Image 1: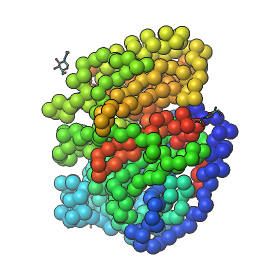
Image 2: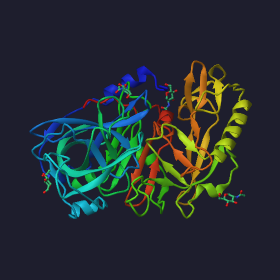
Image 3: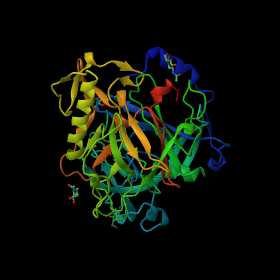
Image 4: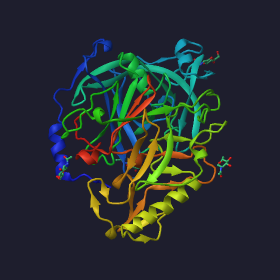
Length: 445
Ligand SMILES: *[C@@H]1O[C@H](CO)[C@@H](O)[C@H](O)[C@H]1NC(C)=O
Ligand SMILES: *[C@@H]1O[C@H](CO)[C@@H](O)[C@H](O)[C@H]1NC(C)=O
Ligand SMILES: *[C@@H]1O[C@H](CO)[C@@H](O)[C@H](O)[C@H]1NC(C)=O
Ligand SMILES: *[C@@H]1O[C@H](CO)[C@@H](O)[C@H](O)[C@H]1NC(C)=O
């Protein structure tokens, strides 16, 4: 649902036109002061997937790669079937670069020699979360191109030499949006994620921020690597000043589908203490909110789940309490539309600045001194399932999910989330719609 008006977005367009967009083959370590790196985010409205775009392998050929954004994935992989490059190099087994990937695999290939096929090569898993297709593929490196930003405008393109990714096959990309998405960008807690590689090659602080768009019809969202300031016109000032902060907690047990990846999970978890609807406690067994000895339980953040998924016993209580509060607002419940369990007649719901005026749901999080609320309201909560029917955009995850709360894309949109890996802190703004802006900016790339 587009909640921001067109005229409003037209205003954003003028604020966000590009001042300069030239190419610099200079030492990447010399990024000017107070600039960092930016990648765009688009959303496929039919598959509800978020993807980014980057350029590979300048200057002899020019490959633009669209890649799915997977916040919790450990690596970057792209389909190398038609990849041609004179600067591509494989990473050999047991090299330091291979060790960084934490992968135990060493690959051989019967040829012919090509990117993705050589002997004595470091092998890294390439996992497609939609088809659950997991293969071990050649780990290689090439020059990629990245744009700097000052938080306001996209400025200059830089070469990022020796950017590492695994060279997947064409089966790996099945189920990714459109015919154009040829890879996956992992932002997980590893040394070979997109964010870690970019931060280290530009000597930027190890942090990144996401602004997921609810639609990319009128503008694009953002991945910022290296820190703020973050400007969201027409708001004056840096959005990081409105951050609430909560610790990123580590799940001590790996959640990777690749069983050879040992140790703690590389996904991002936060500590939800309880949930409130209109300020009232939702009651459920709170032991679901922490990890058991097998790493089951807890709350993770996912850009792959389109909607938040809850353990059945949390889901049941939350829906019951939400319906009760909605009824108090004279909102009429109607027959549910799968996969949702609580749907309402949209003609009985009034409008607010954040979208449909439904009861707010607060995730009450561990904070520094006091707890912090991650407030979900309006369009972060509701989705139009059919004409005149708005449903609570949260899904039942069954009685035995691995993770009790998976905070999904719809609930993360239109707010800025900053993952600081040096302090293990998540910074998050309230909904940007409250300040008349959003994560759909118009920019030229
Ligand atoms: C890998 O080694 C085998 C055996 O020595 C050889 O037949 C094959 O062609 C080599 N593969 C490549 C890609 O060079
Ligand atoms: C979105 O994904 C669907 C399914 O893969 C595809 O048919 C469609 O072309 C994609 N849309 C865009 C704008 O890429
Ligand atoms: C809560 O769940 C835990 C783990 O599933 C269980 O051991 C405990 O008995 C439950 N507590 C209550 C009050 O149901
Ligand atoms: C947002 O826009 C509305 C209507 O244009 C206006 O009434 C409101 O004051 C604005 N809010 C902020 C925070 O700028």
